[in-house]
Image (cartoon, rainbow, N blue to C red; front, side, top):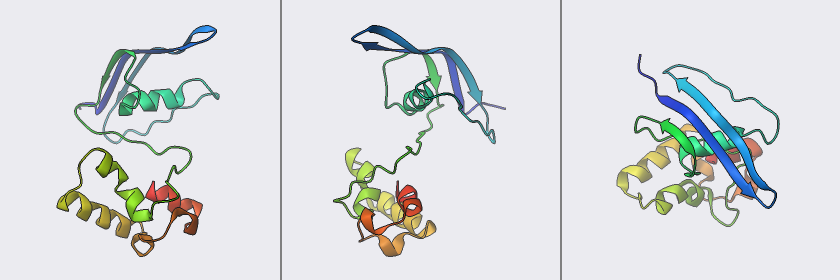
Length: 138
């Protein structure tokens, strides 16, 4: 069976005023279809850094990350919705930022809002939603 994610010898350091801080060192992970994995560790050990590296948010690292041309995303701990945008505007923000707004992508967003029972709130603002609803929009 082919993996859907391979990480080989992944290392990441940050440069601070006190010098270099190694966050990750020689991490190796293979994930296969239907795998369920958890990244567990103390605060500051690099869990979010691994996710940011896999998704491409952080691009400066040593080693190899192969997602086999799959786009990977993750939900942050907070919803990160922009309070001055409606639910619809927040939902399509990623499409706008990547210049991917088209009939098909907008249709997909509409379908997802309906699937997650958010379509009737599309013209509301995040302050009108519960925490769980905000997470679903995010």
